[in-house]
Amino acid sequence: MEREQSCSAVGGETHPNHPQTLILKSIFFLDGFGEVLLTSNSDGLSWESVDSPETEGSHCLGIKLVPEAPAEVKFSDIYAVEFDNFGVIQKSKLAVAPSCILCDEYEMYRFTVHCFQRSKSQPAQWVLTKFTFGHEDQQTCQMWVNQIDASLVLQVGRPKNLLVFVNPRSGKGIGSRTWEAVAPIFLRAKINTKVIVTERANHAFDVMASTANKDLKMYDGIVAVGGDGFFNEILNGFLLSRHLAHYPPTPSDIIDFPQAEGNYPNEAITEIDNGSEDQAPLLSSAKYGGLGLSTSRNSTDHDSEISPFDTWFRFGIIPAGSTDAIVMCSTGCRDPITSTLQIVLGKRVHLDIAQVVRWKKTPTSNFDPYVRYAASFAGYGFYGDVITESEKLRWMGPRRYDYAGTRVFLRHSSYEAEVAYVDIKSEDTNTNGKRVLCRRNCSICNTKPHLKHSHTGSRSRQDETRWLKSKGRFLSIGAAVISCRNEKAPDGLVADAHLSDGFLHLILIRDCHHALYLWHLTQLARKGGKPMDFKFVEHHKTTAFTFTSFGDQSVWNLDGELLEAHQLSAQVFRGLISLFASGPEV
Image 1 (cartoon, rainbow, N blue to C red):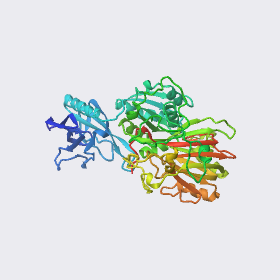
Image 2: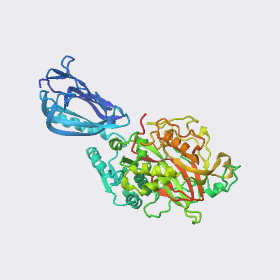
Image 3: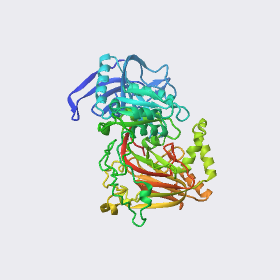
Image 4: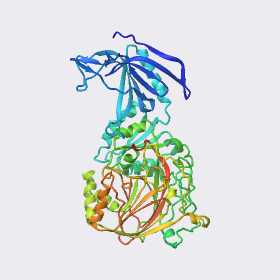
């Protein structure tokens, strides 16, 4: 090397928000590119070639090599920096081969910046990327590593300690392999992880339900390596003993009241505040009126000391399941690397959660409230029958859903039921009746709720809430918390459902001819399809609903968990939890 190496810190230049961040400039060799002037400022790293236009790049066998490389990377996109000690730096690389024997190679001290880039073919997918810089002076490399490390510490919201649950049986039994593939990213990012590989059904539920709050406060979040059902298990273990909220009204409360009034007059049930604060906390206080508290567990440790969870505690999902709808909706793709990067970089979105209360298991059962939570979907009829059938075929892996779905479709079973739901005016939905898709930095999800949707209330407020009913024979009844995008339904069950707008999408499919139902299902499977444009399909945006079955019963599917219920109620809590995710890309 003939060029003199140099390093400089621009004296006196600091960023007002980061007073300790100096602007550094040094000449390095960028592996696979050549000599560059590397600059570090408050936002990130940037570099430019120091070669003249005539000599830029290198030659191999008479071929001029002009490698392409990004010219900058923001600290918000960097998850780690490592000092690599002494090793080889290549000036350039052939596009058609990993290296060339005639290309320039130098041995020097190196450090590597680990970050990500968005895939060119699929922008929602994040691809691991690294840039290795070389310098003759070891102290120069170490100084840059220290400087970058100091800048990464200033990044807000990045986790330091995580509790990780791995389901080895998720999907095709790939849970453990998925974790092994992404674990080095956590290690490189200096994140401490306590890993629990589940050994039986409800193992994660039991751990979450029995773990003391003081122990959970040691962690910045909980990560599930598995599918939607596994995450549901962890979520219920966490919320059932910690989320204080009154029950929604029972079906008899609504159904026994005259339809003409459209209101529920029970004075014991007060207003259900569907998110009266901006960025609703993880664990709400007991401000929901109802027949009783949803927390039935008693624990000396699960007390009111829950405020520290409000601002920083998050859940993460690394997809290893059969559908991974929550990950698809919250990141835009079903990719373990993308989800892992969004966890280590501390991304955050809020997620609505539905509370489902079963009042009676069968018509002859005693009145006994049983609470569960769902993060994506609750479905009855076709959806419950498919899960019931597929449970017998777990040995088939994800293919069991196709086989079970075909069998259930051919049976074409319908069920008599009555559904009551809160009528929501279009101007109360934040979209004014327009179709707005949920995207990263979604304006709907980030809008502060301006109304308190009262499901029930005193007589002075009865004119503010109206319950509507729908009764008949239904092929399916579904309540989507989010769009439920997956590989079988690219737009999801409801394309314009949002992650955190405080609404459920109630979908009632009335009994119809076999061919018409098949047409509806094919529309779900098409991107840009219109599955709601049928006379036998009812779509209601609501904040709560009740359900009562008559005659033969199906079962409910709550994020993959089966629930048998004769009477059931559900309500949605806006932004009840936070996810390590950035939201779906366009």
